Length: 86
Image (cartoon, rainbow, N blue to C red):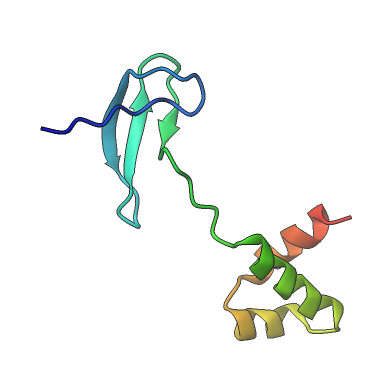
């Protein structure tokens, strides 16, 4: 029997228990030491190259609604990226 030992991404403790699944089907864990809750490998959605491609299209005078239709990304997401970019 193969056993996998997982460690908490926040405190490094190995006292994790499985605690449900995400909508995408990834396993969620809960740490008993620090109380941290979530997946071990979070997926943030967009790669940096995809994000830069969308922002480049915006800077070439595309509208937020046009980007939403073309790339399938929410205009609120693009607006948040624009606020964070220098």
